[in-house]
Image 1 (tube, helix red, strand yellow):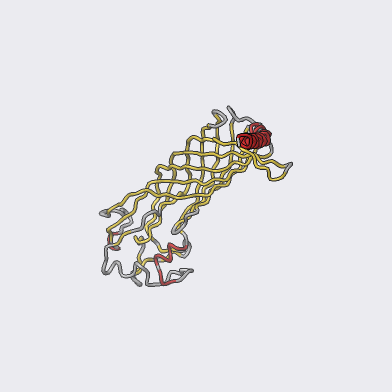
Image 2 (cartoon, rainbow, N blue to C red):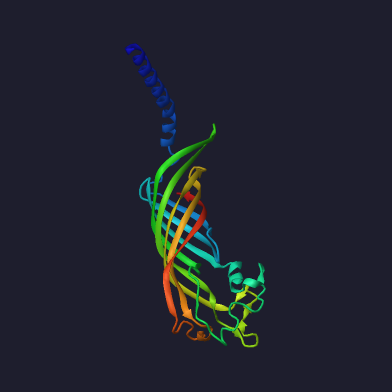
Length: 276
């Protein structure tokens, strides 16, 4: 019995040793990075698309300048320009009976609001990134690995996390607060060029924060393709408790209650970078 146990233990140790010996070349290869980026700069271009769209959608184009403090830690500076605004669903919300193309048929949700005004509330999360934005932050790259797609074609990659903060220009198109009424139809004017009703439009600068995680696939020595998910957060505000008769061009939010909150939006990022 003792002999069988000893033989079994020996077999297990030999198997573990064989596995460890087989894994050693892989560990050595992974440790042999294609390049070291400590004290190096990095220049990248990122295209980000919002993925949790409903009434709004956004595209954010950014330049990323990075300085690598160590192999795992880096400082980021992101400067971008965003294109954001309402989707087709905004017009459908303003005129549910118009169908998918929303040609601006009367009556809409604004019809008769001037004659017999009823208290209305606007919708949250309508502020969108629209215009320039800038962020600074820190990036952590805790994992460096290698994928062997083919025997002669190893793909090196990094897994990273980033936290950034800064400021951005935002825009907001109201759903319920009409800015221009047609006195003949007693309804809100429809803007054919924009594809939705002529409602309150706001624009402002405010704070912006984001966190991202993703993979960087390294190629051509010091170049990489980056795939990431970035979560943006910013301040939200929207009018509540207003009537159609309250709107004035000079001071549209006079006497209107402003409700505040936080907007959260997910982006899918695709980037290309070069370290030098």
